[in-house]
Image (cartoon, rainbow, N blue to C red):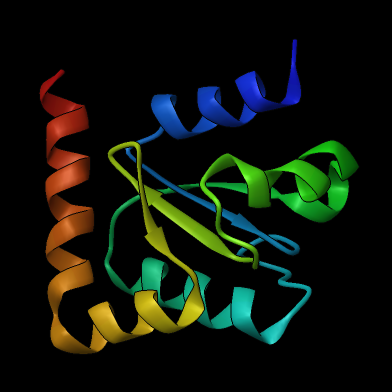
Amino acid sequence: MDVMERIKGQVDSNPVVIFMKGTPQIPQCGFSMRTAQALQSCGEDFAYVNVLADPEIFENLPRFADWPTFPQVYINGELVGGCDITLELYQKGELQQMVKDAAGKAQAS
């Protein structure tokens, strides 16, 4: 399977997914750590992809949504952004609602 199809598959099959360096339990950079913590604080399950464990995804993810940095958060198939945007949404209380709505929509399906 083409790497872009694999990325699209992750984005399409998970209501909330973070492409990050490391894992939520063992992040490998501060930006990924802070973004994963914000998602965890929302209280819903989310998927993650460790881009360091898959060099193809690491190299090609920036082209997928024309976003050059990691982490990348997708909710309901749409790119939300990276660390700064995710933390800003969290601080405003918007991320929590976005994640809750995505989780609720997935459970209803």
